[in-house]
Length: 429
Ligand SMILES: Nc1nc2c(c(=O)[nH]1)N[C@H]1C(S)=C(S)[C@@H](COP(=O)(O)OP(=O)(O)OC[C@H]3O[C@@H](n4cnc5c(N)ncnc54)[C@H](O)[C@@H]3O)O[C@H]1N2
Ligand code: MOO
Ligand SMILES: [Mg+2]
Image (cartoon, rainbow, N blue to C red; front, side, top):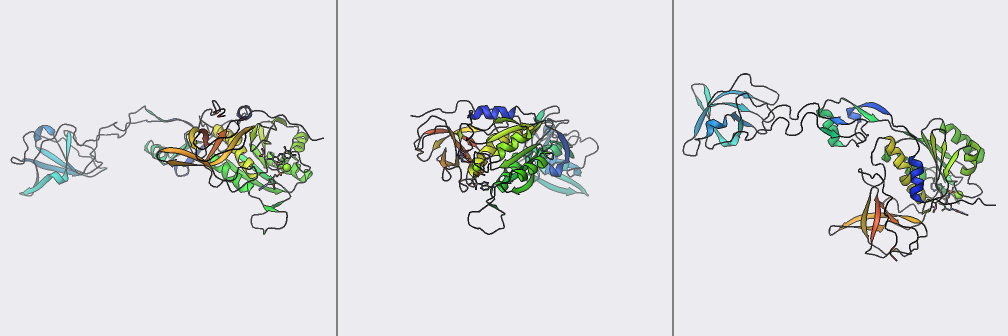
């Protein structure tokens, strides 16, 4: 007798995996290695930026008050009493009708309250003393970057869980983080099952295909922020697979297998889980593709049986593994972000279950359009390379037409969502 499985709604399945306790941990990495990691602490300004009033131009610093009378006809002359480049400080106080030659980034000397650009001045020399002439008046504060104008001491700048992009790296450097507290990457083990699987380097043989899922999922793990650990591919042999799963589990936080998850004669995942005494969270979801995605708990570890079909495997990872990884990286919005777009092609297939169509998001005249990026079948591999979104078609609908607005989940996005599963546009006809 074939096992009968009861499907649960997608959002319920997501909820169940999110209840798992993969406790986020912190580690310190050097700032050079921080790009692409996730912050484990909030970053606050511990000093003003800039930390002193500084010149945004190469020019002369002086007192605005002294420039009041300056016109083209009546230039005003200043005695140049010093010269400073960025990093140097003018010692002493600047007096009336004195100026300091100052370069971009240098601290404004005491007594000065404005800067005039070099191009607007004329230098003169008399008895070995340098003078400078200006023909326009300036106001107090002209051409000065004020202390704290960028940010003030105490301001909260980026939150824990933020993806460290180049801009965040600049902030970390500004505030002295030579070592950065980042979320420790959860270790995600992967093994591929299937007697039909060839290594990537092997030539094709009748009845066999190359193992593409492993390399796809390894990349998905890295993209989601996890550390991938690949245990190789295994033929459909119960004992071998059981042993491989048992060994792998001891080395990882989460274990993923691909294939063997359905009801076939050589689909051993259900039997392996039974043998290991795992607590199965679900083994059927009301969705296409990926309906057979199975998740189980083994102690404090999660086990994912992703489908062998490439598109189903891909979708299963993005919906159920990715948010768990993101949560363990302190990300406050761990799910794929949902937005709306216009369907760029008819989709006449009925959808008894919620459907996730791999699609390409494009901009046309300022509006976002989505079109399926290939054949919409679970076993298809070629639709994935171009997929930048999933079109989400609610279950119980009977097809969608070009021009309709649909929900989409974004695959190339760093903002994320707290919970995208409410208000999926239910039915158009
Ligand atoms: N009688 C039924 N048959 C099937 C059902 C069902 O409910 N009743 N479900 C179908 C659905 S839906 C899916 S999805 C697949 C799930 O298959 P499995 O997870 O058991 O995976 P396999 O049987 O091992 O392989 C399926 C398919 O995928 C190819 N594959 C497997 N591994 C890889 C890999 N690493 N790289 C590339 N391609 C891979 C494999 O060759 C098969 O073609 O079951 C349906 N059947
Ligand atoms: O799980 Mo299967 O991928 O629904 O197509
Ligand atoms: Mg199977």
